[in-house]
Image (cartoon, rainbow, N blue to C red; front, side, top):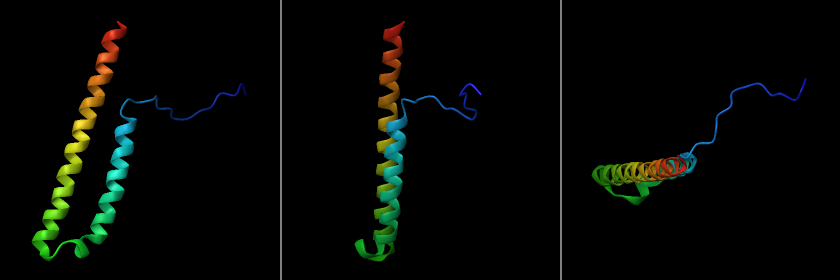
Length: 80
């Protein structure tokens, strides 16, 4: 009973900010999904709106993840 806690522990990740942004983008995407009939006329406009958002969100996440990983890699190389 030395105060030792059991369970799964995950160390801090340099990608935690990207995970937060993913959560925000998912919430915004769900809001957009519910509001898209009011924002765009016709099926083509709605598909373009949702598809454009999906592509932009994916591009943002890829760009951010690559940037964070490059910074983490530079930090490791400076330590050695």
